[in-house]
Image (cartoon, rainbow, N blue to C red):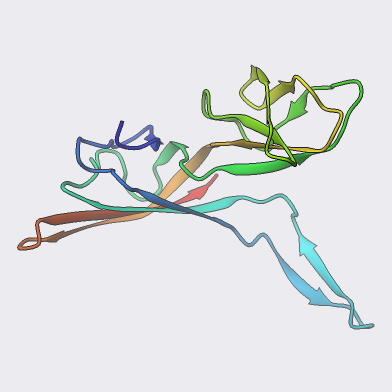
Length: 169
């Protein structure tokens, strides 16, 4: 396997996605403002949406079929998200912020000891043990729109690269 990245449009031909880098950047959905007393407050929606920039330099570029600006793409990210989970003696299910890519969910306590995870659905999991604080990590599925992509080739250096910019819907 060359990459864990998954794209519902276009595609990743052989030798196009080894060593991909993905950035997830929260999209600004409000503003920081000062009150009359000088206190800093946030005015806007506190829920984050992401902008993603994925780039790679390999032997060939990604397949661009369907990746026109504005097209909707389901992205199985390579960037992992983390959530802190507080103790719960009733061991209630945990709701992940985003749907998780199949078999990408892992959990560990603060001492880095693995905790067994049972998946209930795309964004809900059950942990075997929740008597202490722990952390859950997963690769999210994001529904995004293509903003732009670029392709580049170094003819004599035999290197081809690409960059894909997306924003979460």
